[in-house]
Length: 207
Image 1 (tube, helix red, strand yellow):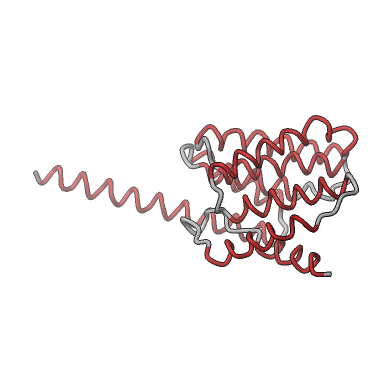
Image 2 (cartoon, helix red, strand yellow):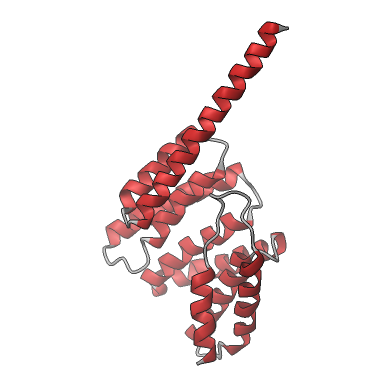
């Protein structure tokens, strides 16, 4: 009995130590990202993903760091390298956590980064995929603010591209803001972004 108690105590301590290492690593990676140290942040998230093979979050953040860095990137080789890595890691995240709306939104962002770089080349093949991704995300998590906001912003961009009025989607931006106001992430490392961008677009809707 004493041996079993000691074993359970050891396992508990080991688990807490691992959790501490995970939290410290994630916090450090987030700090690097906030300092615009893209390569360093991506590398740290990758190391965490290697150690946390059943946790979709570090994979998600490798994808997100590389995707957001690709918007506005003019160097085609660098962009391709970043988005290839983003797709690889978001696919791994999807394998760990299927039917996850946050992952689907991030996958749509990867496609959007390709289209922002070269719409003529990538628009035809990826725009339809984004429609499907946002539709599925909306079915899975209709009250997730990033899902509502991401779909609305995508719909606005599509309308703008075809010379149509974007006003009808402003109500969806407002709904996203209402959802952001009450949204509580599951942990401190779960996705919790998008509110500032939604506020910016909401102001544009008023002008």
